[in-house]
Image (cartoon, rainbow, N blue to C red; front, top):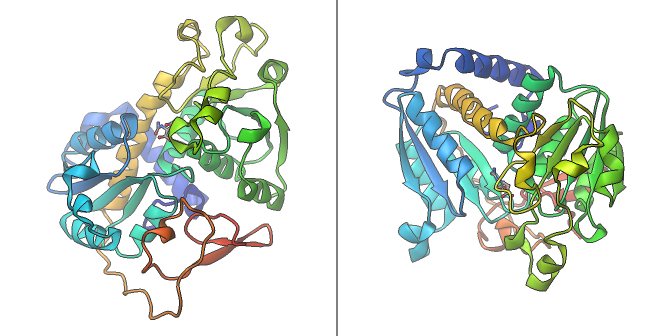
Length: 353
Ligand code: NCD
């Protein structure tokens, strides 16, 4: 695998290698202190971030490499109207890896078509967040010993939560995982994730109650309601306090439950849960830095490859999703794929009407 756009593009054998590299780094981080000396990572954040950006930057620094980029696109030529293709073509020439976050779905996939260095998707709108998934998989495997045979509850905003979409897709590659999808109906998983689960014959249950589901869970993955993705803010207000996990509710949970959260939390996990040994979200954030070190080490060693210019092609790629990168970057080549027998956009995976 050359780019990290979707965890499911990575063969499981490569995931195993990445996991053992990550474990090696966790046990002796200083051995890797010069591993990427003289290499540079471009950190292009078109959307706000704390953990993902800081952990990538810390990861690169701890490997002896350097970082350049922006955390606010207003401070770059993007504010002058530069197109994604040009920003990426140029930055890839300056770096051994591009870490990129965008509010547009499919933006990293689009970037990978023009980049001579590996592109890492650090979140593309409400679509995917594969390096959070790596973080989540490492957390579960280290703390539970295995990614197989477990009941995983996802709770909160399952419609817009990209970490949820990524992790559901990833966990369906491991044996005997049952998904409990806890959300109000209005914030349930997008249709393409449902098609994906059906296509891969996964066991899943869509429910609205957290407390009733809690006792059977091995992992509870809490998420915040994604305010920035709502068109109508009153809708957000309606749902923002819908699930709040507190220590009283945890009384009915298993002793070895893992309570996870990609963070930032707003108020969906009360601070009285933090002291409970089952609350692992801060450890999860720490594992994120180590697995990003492993990923950078793996991808920065790739030989530079200059992609062929896409095209020529006739017409424009048509995708009905207003949040898709193809809406504003109109030069992108048409790209489709299939999920559950339906044709979806090759960038954002939404069904093409
Ligand atoms: C998540 C994200 O950006 O999608 N945060 C993160 O990267 N750790 C979750 C969120 O913002 O709710």
